[in-house]
Length: 218
Ligand code: DX5
Ligand code: ZN
View 1 (spheres, rainbow, N blue to C red):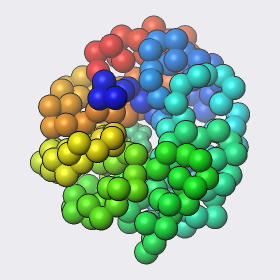
View 2: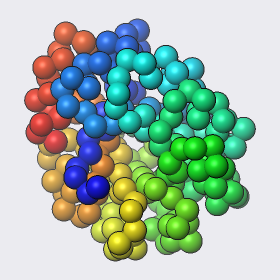
View 3: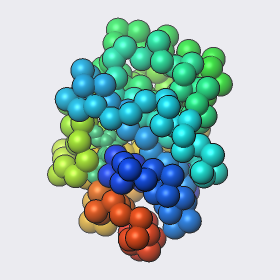
View 4: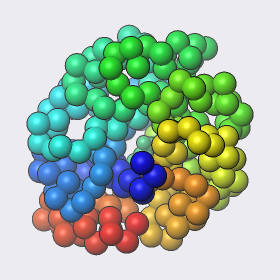
């Protein structure tokens, strides 16, 4: 399914009101909810874990798209599956055994994604394409919302789309996606767009209609 998916990142939502925030973005047409899990080790920031996925799961019917920025990954795979994760994405840079990790994610009943940092070449995921359902190209250095889009990643997005070929694999982009960069990544071949600050702005539930305007614009 190549229709463009919009995946608002709750990293930019109101942390005191996640239930209302995810209901609001679903009502405004979000396809996926993007959950950014950070461990303060693989990236220099700490967010939340499987308990948050479990807590928001009953509030929406959208796909739970969980982006792990943690190392190691394997000890937490079952907890994310139990919590209601649909797509679990691990970074190719997160450890020496990414292939094993991706197999374990599928074995736990989830779709498997592999993410690459802006400094990692497209070729790093070439040997993994028969074992993934999604490739996530970072368009900022992971760790924080609201950073500036790195334009040098556009050629890599196009190369990844080419490598994916006819396979049923989503190509997701994450970081600095807004109304001006969304057309660039879509043209380069992305079919799933993460957007944090562009969708949530100040992260207030009262601004729910703003989500809709921004989702529609992206
Ligand atoms: C960055 C996260 C992103 C982030 C995107 O480490 O993976 O998902 O929330 O935020 P924006 O859209 O504000 O760049
Ligand atoms: Zn993310």
